[in-house]
Image 1 (tube, rainbow over the protein chains, first blue to last red):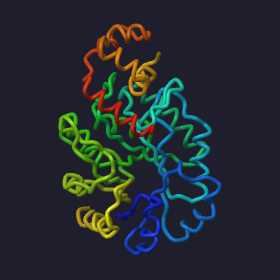
Image 2: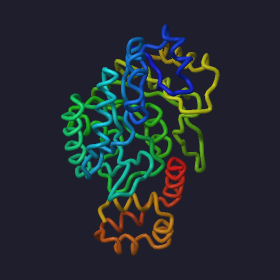
Image 3: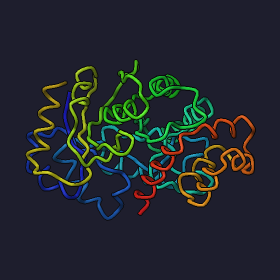
Image 4: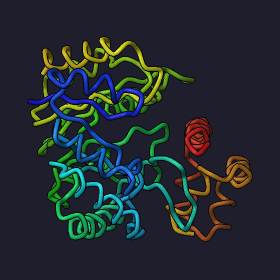
Length: 252
Length: 61
């Protein structure tokens, strides 16, 4: 198992200075364009790269936006990424931009839309995405699958490996009162992150806090090639993030 | 409206969300959703809806 970190501009220098302890970096596809090609070429010469999309909204009955998909495909090509991923989310509908990852109705209609969108994505990008479970504060209406059965159905229907986000699983299990378990399907990669408690004793997956014990405990039950630590702000001293990666290595 | 469009409106349009919280069934039927969908939406946890909408609004800023 390899251990990497989400690339953020604020962490870039520290990541490059510690590549002996970081096996891979995950780039957010939407943050890069033609102007970054030289920097991406430099980066790929020094560390393995995976690409992570946040804007495609593949888990939808609406077709994926071709321009956004082309943009992701270009970043995958420029970085020669070893894999790419997107979320099991919808982010817009009928022209309304939600602004973030919304858990879709977990039902067969969404599954059929997802299969169509994954096929389009596979054709345009040249490889299938890993598909990531999302955190949610609202149990999505019109659902016929529970969270775990949904991930397993997605993997069966699309043939894609999961990008299993253990903090999202932990947050949803807490927010909706179910016992988390690792889904019975192939897991290509794992995300670990931290969040915070909000009203109603819910967990908000904000990526601004340390990885909790519950996530490290689940990490020991997963088999995957790559574990990525996500941190999106309120950055602690970099040694603390390296310490979380070390703890992940020990837990896996 | 489709189901996804209805949810997107709930998450992004404060006035629409207020009308829905006041009278979920009527709002859903007025948007063209069938009776069974309106019944399901009427059972939604409105506090979760408020929290989710607030989180989405922060992300859009």
